[in-house]
Image 1: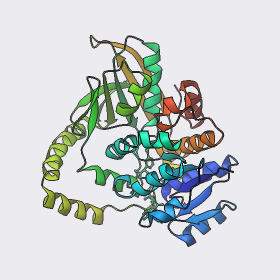
Image 2: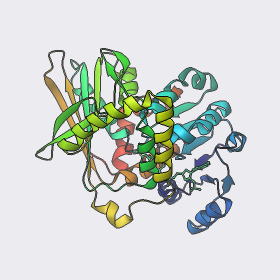
Image 3: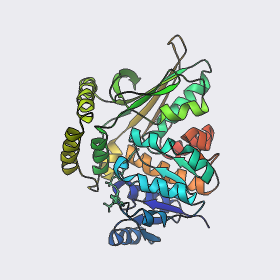
Image 4: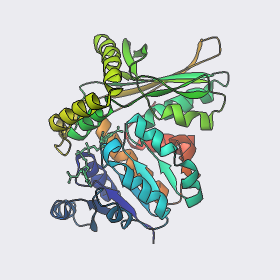
Length: 359
Ligand SMILES: NC(=O)c1ccc[n+]([C@@H]2O[C@H](COP(=O)([O-])OP(=O)(O)OC[C@H]3O[C@@H](n4cnc5c(N)ncnc54)[C@H](OP(=O)(O)O)[C@@H]3O)[C@@H](O)[C@H]2O)c1
C-alpha cells in the first residue's frame, strides 16, 4: 500500500507538517537524519513509523520510497541539500512535494518534467506559502479576464518571523541567478530587478521582484500569458536596497574565488535547524497574496486578493493537504506540475481555504 513519507520531519516546518498530517488521521513515515530525534518526535505525536536517511547518503533517501508513494521534503537549503530527494522520487516513481522557496531550485525541478512523466511521478515544488497562494490568486484573476496577457503577483506579510532554515535558504540564494517570464519566455533576471506597488488593505505597499514558481507554472494552464512578475513585499527603502545588493552579489557571483569565500562566510553565520517563531508569534502574523491581471494595453482588468494567517502554519497545512489528496488519487497529471494544473482550480481553492487563506 502506498504511503506518505515526510523527510526533514525533525525540522521546524517538518514538525508542523507532521502535526497536521497526524491530526488529520494520516499515518506518515517520519524520516530524518537523526534516529533519536525522529524517535522522540514520533513519541511526542502519539506514535508513528520512523526512518533514518541522510542526503549525504543518497541511497538512504532512495530506500525511503516505493512506486506510488508520496514524498514531502523540507530538507533545505534546497540548492545545497535538495537534489537527492528529488532524484529519489523520480527514480522510485513516487510523487514529490517540497517546501522550497528558492527560485533556481524550482527551475531545476521543472528540468525533470520529462523524466518524471516517464516515471509516472508528479513533482510539486514550492508547495508552501511560497508560492501556492500567488498561483491560486493569479489563476482566479486570469479566469475572470480572458483578455489578460500579463499578471503581477505580490506577497505581503505583517510581523514576519523567520526560521533558521528560511534564513539559511535566503543566504544560499544571494549568489544564485533569478529569472522571470518575459514576452512568453523564461529569461534570466536579477532578483530585485523590479519594484512595484500593490494596494493591500487600503495601503499602497511595495514589493521587489523574485523568481517564483508562477513564472514556470502559469503558462501551462494559461498559454496566452506573455509576462509574469512575482514580488515580495518589503518597505520601499529595503526594496531599493535589494536592487543594489543584487547588483553587487551578481558581480561577486561572477568571480569564482570571491563567491566561494562569501558563501563560506555566510554558511558559518546563518544556520538551519535552529527553530522558528512560536505559536503565539505565528498567531499575530497576517499574509496577503494579490494578483493583478492586465491586458495587452497594460490596463489592469482583474484583481484578486487572498488573505490568511502565518506563512509557516499555511505551509504546514497545505503540504499536509497536498500529500493526503495525492495519496487519495486526487492528482490530475504527472510530470512537474503547478498547483492549479495538479489539482484543478476549484479543488486547490478548497485546499487553500482549509489551510486558512481565502479571498
Ligand atoms: N515555501 C515556503 O513558504 C516555506 C515555508 C517554510 C519553510 N520553507 C523552506 O523549507 C526548508 C526547511 O525550513 P525549516 O524552517 O524547517 O528549516 P530547518 O528547521 O532548518 O529544517 C531543515 C531540515 O533539514 C534537515 N537536514 C539538514 N541536513 C540534512 C541532511 N544532511 N540529511 C537529512 N536531513 C537534513 C534538518 O535535520 P535536523 O532536524 O536533524 O537538523 C531539518 O530537519 C527551508 O529551505 C525553508 O526556506 C519554505
